[in-house]
Length: 407
Ligand SMILES: NC(=O)C1=CN([C@@H]2O[C@H](COP(=O)(O)OP(=O)(O)OC[C@H]3O[C@@H](n4cnc5c(N)ncnc54)[C@H](OP(=O)(O)O)[C@@H]3O)[C@@H](O)[C@H]2O)[C@@H](O)CC1
Ligand SMILES: Nc1ncnc2c1ncn2[C@@H]1O[C@H](COP(=O)(O)OP(=O)(O)OP(=O)(O)O)[C@@H](O)[C@H]1O
Image (cartoon, rainbow, N blue to C red; front, side, top):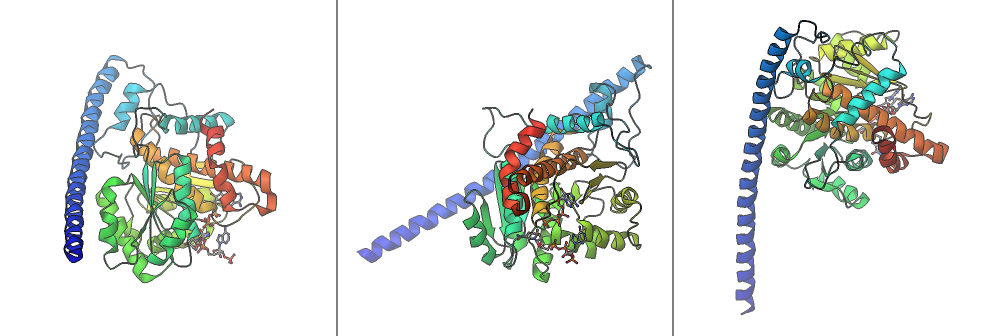
């Protein structure tokens, strides 16, 4: 009797899982179709606006000219004509050349960039459902490093993402879960089919951050490589940090030319990448030139060189973020930066260049994330001084965000 009952419940459970699997497959297909439809609509809109723009420019010869655009700058949504949109929709470009090479920025220029960051932040309304403001994936976390992926993932939530996933090794997963019930933790990164396990989630992710706490184990690096390749196929914005940058310095072609990628090297990672790409040591008398050249060599993807001042370049412009932080250099600050960038890159990408006044949305996102990290650092340092840690900075992310972007 008991045996029969147990068999029945096993059968019922199996049936349930089969249904659930089918339901998830259907849901994946629906999301992919929805994504393709949205892309098509954006392209149509781009073409319509291109038409309006050419009519406007025929009628009005006196319209102010846009700044020169990079010839090989491929925008998100590929055929989407942002130059045309800018010409048709925007007033004359406000920030023009203010971030160009070797130019000092006025306070007004800085305020302009802050305004562009504000423009891409989705409004908080009752009309949106869970997930719409960001589902971010962090790929990293191994036996040695559990803090780094946690800092990145929790920061993504504190900035305003709705869901934050961590894809880490099996032995790191329980530890990371124990830090925070808010995170969704997948113990898959050292499994034999790791790439496939992560790939299943990609249609539901808006951006991925590869590298915090990944470590340098060959198998994990190979899996990270597979995940980067799958993410590129899906056109997902990719932030590459920490050991993800180690991988890129060994195999630059993995990300070269993918303009939806942002690299966030610290001093050491920058030197490694620069030497790998330019076959020259970094010129310490020309930081601007170096970051510009590295971005160009990587195919104009966005590079954020972290340090006393964060230098951000897409191979055409260099933005400098020297927002006040502090003199405290505890580990984990770069992880906060990459987590916040995961969210801001998604928001900026979605908002498109019309919201960033024709500026590369990833440059704007990077400036926002750098300023936010420095502001959180500043606030935490005011409270804790020398004892300040990355966790103290995480607690400041909300108020720092409000102060910079919601006032
Ligand atoms: N709690 C956790 O789990 C955390 C885990 N983390 C994770 O650790 C992993 C390895 O990351 P990493 O940063 O230690 O490695 P890497 O960049 O190769 O640096 C190695 C050496 O480079 C140097 N160096 C660095 N910066 C420099 C500078 N500005 N100026 C000059 N030199 C500089 C410095 O050399 P030294 O001073 O020792 O001579 C340093 O020792 C990675 O997965 C990361 O995510 C961290 O996120 C922290 C929190
Ligand atoms: N010398 C400095 N002065 C002021 N702020 C700095 C300085 N160096 C780094 N920072 C701040 O810390 C952030 C992270 O840079 P850092 O070089 O610590 O990255 P990282 O080594 O990748 O960090 P992590 O410890 O997370 O691996 C920078 O974006 C900047 O805000």
